[in-house]
Image (cartoon, rainbow, N blue to C red; front, top):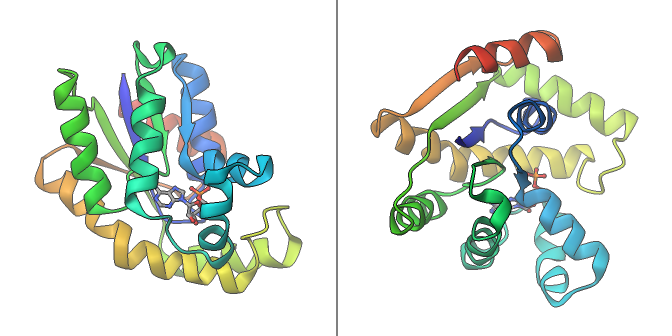
Length: 186
Ligand code: AMP
């Protein structure tokens, strides 16, 4: 099972990804988490990407694509994987298609968690007030991430829609409700 989970910031994508990957016994690959780990380890990659994370902007495609190529080549991905936070641009989506093709593979599911924009804005505001512990979770950076999402990541959904592989799941409701809707699509 090779799954891509899409959705705007504040849609509950990370939470759903953890549950789904666990249930299906496949690695949960979060490029955001990989970036945050790189920043905290102080590696060269971390030094390069910190400013983008802090600003709520996307890390350059070449860095993320290299990272994903390496990650997907590891043994634990042989039986499948769940990508969370990748692809985030059309360029990344196309690179993923090419990469999988070169391995004679393709995605089995592309699932988008949809939540009305008004609800996302409300959630982002609340997260900013309560503080999730993520340094990019203040309201200002979160709003920037949402803008970036509409400008650069929304075309990714369209790309998969045109390929006929996009499945939408309503992201409103409890964590369990959303998870069972996702499971129902797989
Ligand atoms: P996330 O945890 O998925 O919300 O990602 C946190 C941050 O990591 C984003 O705001 C970006 O700065 C960076 N990031 C994560 N995934 C990608 C990606 N696929 N392309 C570019 N930047 C990314």
